[in-house]
Image (cartoon, helix red, strand yellow):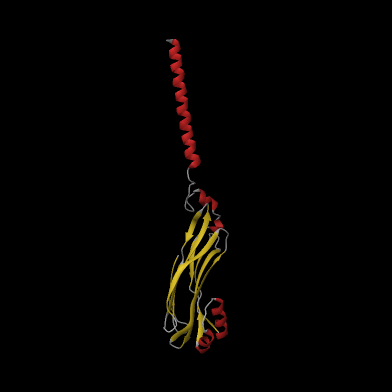
Length: 207
């Protein structure tokens, strides 16, 4: 009986040890193979720690700007640089005046430095009451700190040459990358409406 009790006790200890080892392995496995934690900037998570202060957005601003008049030769050069094709020279020469309007949404960090800037710039020519070709929009961005990137995500335009208004709406995306995705995002958009001469009927935006 004593020998049988000893064997049973050893079997019990062995089984107990196996259960303990299995439990420890399960805990370690859950820790080692769990996906990395993510957190929004500023909530104390690991991604927030990795974003330098100079790259974090602290405030949003807009700049409506003022329409700028250009000569016929300047407009021809600008239109060619923008990739506008067609018989532009004659139309530009026949116009009364040509204009461009640089409107912006921009972002500052806590130190007051501009880190991102989104531009939407309608260009148009006019003959009195009507707009004439070329009528087009330039869209671009300035990224002033490492880690951020910019993508033009599309837009649309309405009216233009042959009308007395031109509306342009453009969208952008700023992304700050950490690990394998964006941990800070901004989706600015700007919608401008212009008219004959230097008329700017409205400026709308989102950040």
